[in-house]
Every structure is written in structure tokens, then in C-alpha cells.
Length: 486
Image 1 (cartoon, one colour):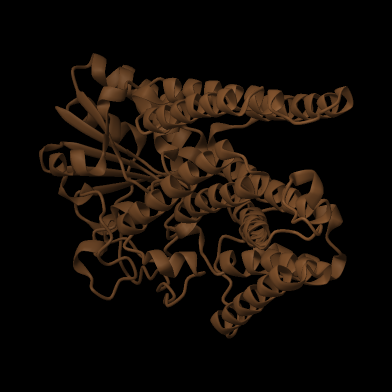
Image 2 (cartoon, rainbow, N blue to C red):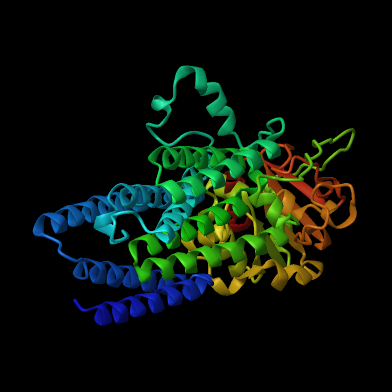
């Protein structure tokens, strides 16, 4: 295949990827966005295979075999994965992108002639060494950081990985997999020192083509990926997942330069830039410093522990909530991670249908960082076939809480905390929250009075018009539906 035809094919694939990003920006067009992405990837793969120089039948067989194995694994995982575990799946896939970048860079370093990156004397081109070095560093950080992010979301290592951990390291690994931040002494000084050593090793690799320096640089990049993510708590996991998505894109772009593949460069740049923009938007939504998060919580202070003191709450039953809901004119449902854990999205759909039949106007309010990744709640509601036109983002619906008769909150602690608006000493002060406290009545579904990921008390629990509904979100919602229907 000629270079010009390949370039046109890659351009068409790039257009499909741009359309995919555009489609994925809205739940209503997300299916079309996925189809565009699949079409673009198919075109990119076909063009790459046809453009391979001097490839024999054995090479094609190995590539097809790899695609078949990877495609089959992806199909099985996609069919079996629970929607509640989607954040973990995204983190795991990011880790594979990073590891692939490391492997490709290592292959190019060991066999530069096969990649066409050598000078006339057989040495590796200096610019290529820089490109593969940066791709290796970013890829290694992406891999190890994504593994830790997976562990913090899943609260355990990937299947089979635990058996590979030596016994004396298992307590440390278990701590790293906790959603609680791990604050090592002088962690910032350690990270800065390791970062400087990595840069020096990159210079050494570029100047001398030292294999030892390349290996040390890679190992330290793996290490700093772990050190950057373990100090970040579960509350910031949505930003971390988005940030690692950006890293995986830049790693792919860096390796694209090494492979001299424009499609990989364009795709990596699209993923990297969109992930960085999304991370920045989410940091603003959480009142977090963008650089603080990407540097491993640099400059953060510990959150204050929840303190209920002598405060009392009003505890109610499903029957109490059902009576008020069916006599309401407007109900706003606020889903949070509690809905995901209980897998209550289908029960929530039943509640929506039941109240709508009674003539009640029902809407859904989505906070940008509800759940454990961007769009987590949107995905769950879409799985339950809840109409897109009743699902609203925070800025679209926040001013409607004042006219709502009922706000039904399902395990959304920190994103409904009014202290973010009034308490200057609160760790979440300044974070935009849903104005649930303005509704005439608030029903808050929780298993217990435990604090959310921010680890702080929520004054909303103790308001006169708030009724706590203690129990599993799915069972509680089902009981409310039965009471309304009965």
C-alpha cells in the first residue's frame, strides 16, 4: 500500500475518533459514539496491517492471533463485567495501554533497525531515543498508577495477582489497595528526587544508549507511578481515573513517534488532551487543585474526621417516604455511589415509573463526580433505561431543588453536603454541591451514619426536614415502590 493511501485511511480513522469523542459527550449519543470509535479502530488496524513493510505470512499470523486473543478476552470481560465495576475496568484497561507502550519502547531500543530509527553507523537516532524514553516513562507511570487505582476502587488486587506477592509484602500491598490515602514521610521530597533521577537517566540513555540506564529509568518510573497514586484518597478517584486516561494517551502518542505511525500520534493526542481537560474540569467541580492531584496530593491537608457528637437524626420507614412521595408534585432523585454498590438502578427505574403513573414529576440530578468515575451515574441510569430527558447535570437542575417537594438521595454523601457552601474550615469548602437542602423534604438512604469518602460529617442529616432511611438502597427503594403501588 502506498504512503498516500495509508495517510488518507488514517485521516478517515482520525475523523471517526473525533466523532466518537463528540458522541460520548452525551448519554443520548453515546451509543453512536461507541460505534464511531469501533469503526475508526477497525480502519486503523486494517490500514496498519496493509502498510506493514516486508511482512511475511508468519508475521501476519502472529498479529491476527494476538488480535483474536485480545478481542476474545475483551468480549468476555465486557459481557461479564457489572456496570458498578466499570471504573475498575477502565483503570485496568489504562494499565494495559501503559504496559504496551513500555513493551514497544523496549522492543525499539533492543532492535532499532527493525523500526527504522538508526543512523548510518547503526546507532539509534537521538530524537528517537528521547521519544521512546518519554513513552516508556509515561507508560510505566500509567501502568503502575492504574494498578493502584484499580486496587483502591476494587479494594483488592486483580485476580491471580495476589498469589504473586511475597508474604512479607502483603500487608503493605493491602494498605496500598485501601481507599484511604497513604501519606509516606517526606513523600514529596522522595517523588522529586526520583523524578530528577529519571530525567538524568533519560539524558544518559539519549547520550550513551546505555541498556542499564534504560532499565533503571523504567523501574523508577514504575515506582513513581505507585508513589503518586497511593497518597490519593478514594474521594479523588474520579479525577485519578481521568488523569490516568490522559497519561495513557500521551504514552501512546510518544510511542507513535517511535513507530513513525501518524495514526497512533493523533489518537494518543486526542485521548491525552481530552483526558487532561476532563481532569481539570473535575478538579474544579471538586474544589481540588489540578496540580495537587496529579502530583500525588501535593499540598493537601487531611480531612477532618466525621463527628456526630450529640446530634440526633429522624429515622423513617419506606411507608413514610412512599406516602409523601405519592402526594408530591415534584421529586428529584439524587443517585450516588450507594446506588452503585447496592445495584439499585433498576429499582430506581421502577420508582420512577410508579411515581410518574401517579402524576408525579420525577427528575434526576447528577453531580459531575458522583460515583467513582466521570459519567458513572449516567451509565447506571442508562442501563436501567431511564429516559435521557429526565436526567440533568448539576448546573441544569440545581435551581429546581427549591421547588421540589421531595429530594430522594441514594448514598450521595459529600456531593450533597451543605457545609461546602457555608463552613470555611471544611475540607470541601468551595466545592460545588447539589442544593438538596433547599427541597421541602429530604429522604436520605444510607446503610449507617458513616461518613463519605471525604471523612466529614454532613449537616444535611440533622435538618428538621430530613428523614434518614437506613438500609440497603435496593431493598429500601423496592419497599417504597410496593408501598406506593399498594
